[in-house]
Image 1 (tube, rainbow, N blue to C red):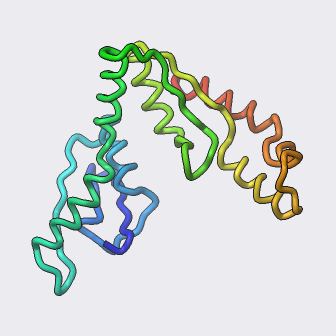
Image 2 (image 1 turned 30 degrees about the horizontal axis):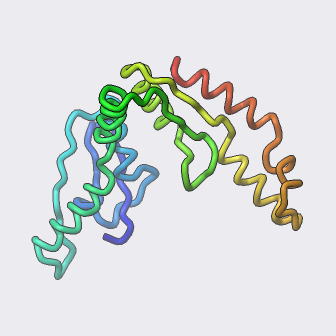
Amino acid sequence: MHGAACWLDKAQSWLSDPCSFPTARGLQNHANSLQAALMGGTTMVMALVLPEQHCSLLDAYENCRALTDANAVLHEVRSEMETLVREHGVNSFQMFMAYKDTMMLRDSELYQTLQTCKDIGAVARVHAENGELVAEGAKEALDLGISGPEGIEISRPEELESEATHRAVTIPNK
């Protein structure tokens, strides 16, 4: 589907998805828009499958379904967290504000996960670092030819941890 993006138009309360407009580009993706729906901004997500020229309806449907199902995990994660707490005795969940492009949660995701922990009585553990700026600092260290542990000071100044810690304790009170 050409790496299509999605966006949420709050004023109109509709979600433009990659199935409807496969060449659309925006800041949001389908997962982000579904997260907005989970937070209560959008109450329904309804895809309109518009096949590209020379694409069968069935192929267009299958492409759309594969794309949206892969990203529609928010309710599953919350449900799985509840199950882990209630049925398996898990009492805490670790979240990362660091490790960009792997484990880092965006602030909205952190907020949702913290809310879920609160709702189900789980302890929230947060690795607080400004992942975006740490990634930039790591690039700077590598540009200087520093690839060992001595690059920690360059890539992770304590101010970034302080800033992220402040965000981590402020976000739940939005």
